[in-house]
Structure formats: structure tokens, C-alpha cells
Image (cartoon, rainbow, N blue to C red):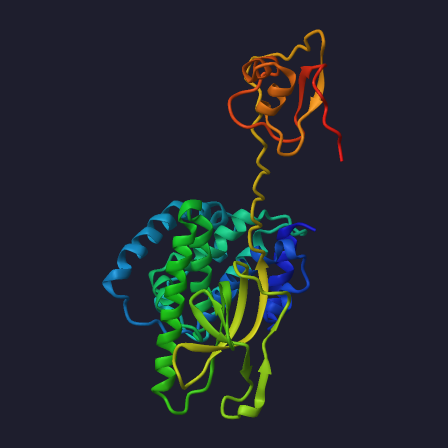
Length: 363
């Protein structure tokens, strides 16, 4: 089955109310990562119909928005063919939307149904462009995603943006970019925790994010720079409701995981881990090549056994000087005949020596 068929089925299930996690379990592991990125975008589009647009972003976010708008302008041309084939799916102004009009995703869905053939053969790249451009080109959606915090309905779109930054980072800058994102994620969690602490009636805020597991410290786990407990309270007011965190594999430092966690009112800097799913195994270290012993024979020299000489294996603690004394042949001559360089000769090396040498008995 092609990826676009998986995606079409997954969208139908998402619109009926199934969670993304439950949907992904039904599909092969090789396509789950790509499906998750697309489904998060679709889910965010549906939720944006009811999300209140936050205040304009601060000036330090303007450059990021300009870069996004530039990329959006390059992709805008991809919608021309779609608009010609399905005029009923043309985008409407969001400023005049009312509660009795179809939602943004419903309008996209109608246009998609009008242009796709009976079998789901629409290629994934154009379809992805339609989905992303339709609701990411507007300034308000970009601002909402960038300013969202864990627990907000649109925070999944911000996590998707984090993943795209990692996917497009040069290999030599990937570790640096991952550290920057890890700090941003911790800052977001801190803002949510401060907001919860300011409201006595607040309950836990649940969120999902992609992190690099970095190790364990006593009763806590490090996901990125986030300090996570090994379980969570199903009722934040009941300590006896503690439930261990679940997962689908063994956590090893360096592995990339999708973590579901909750932020609770109380001490800041720690979140409670609900579950995790391993997304990418850590890179395996490249084995070091076994060093080869340096040959002791001279380059370009060829050993020729002289008449009256025989092969001899050098014994333990035996030197060329010892052999020279017994054979009445100088060490220089022994080195020349056997193509040996200066320096000690290892025990067990076979050389040519005069046949008259007194061979010591072997143990």
C-alpha cells in the first residue's frame, strides 16, 4: 500500500475522533514518522477554527515570520492547478468566518474530494503542499503556533516546526540546533508551569514532544533539557494515583523519543512522564580499525637465502647481537641479508642465519 493511501485512511480516522497515537499503531513503523507530521498539521487545521488568535508576537520573532512568508510565496504557485480544478475549494478570508460556515478543514476536504480520482492515487507531495499552504500561509496561524505553549491545542504544530528545523539542519550544526530547541522546549514548559501556579483551580496540562533521551539521575530522566519523573498522577490531588510511565522499548542515551507528559501545578522545573515511544535509535559507534604492526623489513629490499644459510626463528629475549656472536657474522650483515631496519627484532621472527649456528634447544 502506498503512503498516500495510508494518509487518506488516517485522515478519515482522525476526523472521526481517534487520537494520532491510536491511529499510528495500525501502520508500519517505516511510515509512522511521516504520517505523524502530516496528521499533526491536519489536526491543527481543524482546531484553528475555534482557537483564539493571540496578541502579535514580539519583535524578535519578526525575522522568523519573514523567512516563512518568503518560503510560502515560493510554494503558492502549487495551488494554481488545484484552484482551477476545484473552484469550490478556493480559500476564503478568515476575518469574515462565522460559526455557521464550514470549518477550514471541511473546505479543504471538499476541494480534495472534488479533485482526487476514485482510487487514492494523488501523489503525496502536491497533497502535502495543499494541506500546509492552505492554513500555514496566513500570518495569524504562524503567530499562533510560535506563541503557543504546552497544553495549547496548536502546540503540536510548533513541535512539528521544531522537527522541520532539525530535519533541515546541516549535519555539522545538528547537535547545536538540537540544544537550542531543547532550551526552547524547557522555556515553554516553564511558562506553562508559571501560568498553572497562578491559577489555584488549574489542572494538569498534557503535551507531546519529540526529545533526545540523555540519561537518568536518581528518580528522574532527562529528555533533552527536560527533567521528567518516571511516572505521573492520574489525579494531581491524590498521591496514591501514581502510575509508572509506559514505553515501547529500552531507553538508551542518544535515542530519539516521542514523550507524552503532563505539567502540574506545584514545583517548577519538573514534569511527570506518562508514556514514550522510541522514534529513532542512537547512532552506532564506528569500530576502530585494528592497528597493523609496522613491518620491520626495508622497503624495496628482497630477501634471498645465501648458500649455506638456513631459516631460524628468534627466541624469547634473544637479540641479533647474540646470534651474531654465535654465527661469527656481524649484525650489519644479518640485517642486510634479512632486510631488517634498525631497532629491536621481535621474538618469533624468522630470519636467515649461517647453518653452522648452534641452535639453542626449544622448551
